[in-house]
Amino acid sequence: MDAAGGLAALRGLLDRPLASYYLLLSSAGLLLLIGLTMVFSATSVKDYAEDGNASASLTKQAIFAVIGIGAFWACQRLPASTYRSLGRPLLITSVALLLVLNLLVAYGRLAGQRSVGFGPVEARLNWLFIGGIQVQPSELAKFALVLWGAHVIARKGAALGWWRELATPLFPVMGLLFVLVGYNDTGTMLCLLALVVGLLWAAGVRARVFGALTVVGLIGVGLLIAVASLGAGSGERGADNYRLARLTSFINPPDPQECKLDGCLQLYQGRLAIEHGGWFGVGLGKGSLKWDWLPEAHNDFIFAIISEELGVIGCAVVLALFAVLAYTGLRIARRVDDPFRRLAAAAVTTWLVSQAVINIGGVVGLLPITGLPLPFISDGGSALVVTLAAIGMLASFARAEPDAARALHARPPARWVRLLWAPLPPLPGRRRRPATSTGGRGSVPRSRERRQDDQAAPRGVRQGRTRGDTASERRR
Image (tube, rainbow, N blue to C red):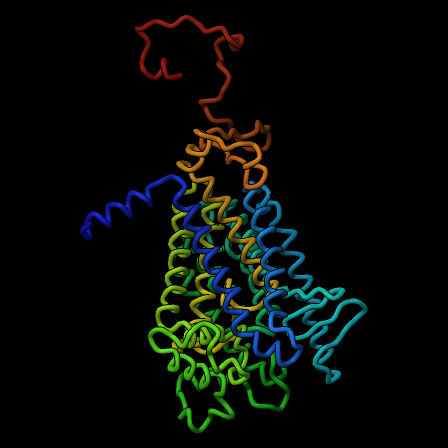
């Protein structure tokens, strides 16, 4: 088969009604499988040295993966109306958790403690421990901002052309989230900013709004970098500003031989891992940098372990899967009819892809190091569960594409399949608006005015018409 025939076959596969759904499942599933494998490879040596159990981190991550798959199954069964109603409660919950986290962390800094607890709640930098359960509120804030922001923008519709409509209530809530998240985690704040940009881009907001957001975002990042000297994030009062050091080392990189044991250990060891891997890698599980040489090898810098053990080929596979995920998410956003689905799909896709770009760019040196985990692959329970829940929402939107819904209704699966998987989506064009009172809405459209000549004809009785009537009268 020549190249033209291969492209034609690929185009035919992509034109199938459920292509978006299967592309989403395959890319997300393979990324999850690679993530579990690499978490085991990156943590087995350290876990065995500390506890004698090489699979301790893998077991923990697998438990969260099972919980995430359950969240995926539940989210792909929910209709769009449920997501719209969940936006505000999730947003209020995430803001409350972030407030508790920041207050406890600030109190701990004043008391000179790295972690502080109040009853069953304990705070440690970016994590809350509630009754022994570890929660990262910033991950929940991403999903909440997607649902609430998409609902607000879809409800405003064409009124988004006015600045006043954007200023209330979208921008104040976004600013509050940016401050609460960015105080301890600048990388997650940048991810939230990218999410908002994707949301507004899908809504068709004017270009000058993006320019204003860029200016405000740069000012906000500068302020967050400055407050690191006052103890924000991992910084300490009176110590060197670690956020400024990361930025300056990226803009003006020092000689690795001079800072490899002090200022740029993580970056230096990550570069060594990439260089050691070469084209085909040293082999899965045979990397040497994970032997406590590379800090956060299981989390922020797990892409360096992939580079060392799987080489350029393995990195290309991971990048290709993220590219397929990005294409699928934007394809779903383009094909669905509901404005809320379109906005939410674009926002989730921007969130996941931008987070992957920021993480990988920091590891390879194309972007400053921010400490963001790699979606699906890095070790972390809260991030994995929320990510799989977002993928489940995308899967429900993929099944609701007009062609996909018609194909599923043309040959509905058995009842046990629908119970284990997902119910049939609604057919396009079958949705009717509920009858609402016209009081308080101004004048009634002329097409719906009651005839003034006689009383309305009884239902089911058609008045006599002649072929000599005008076209407008016949249409009436």
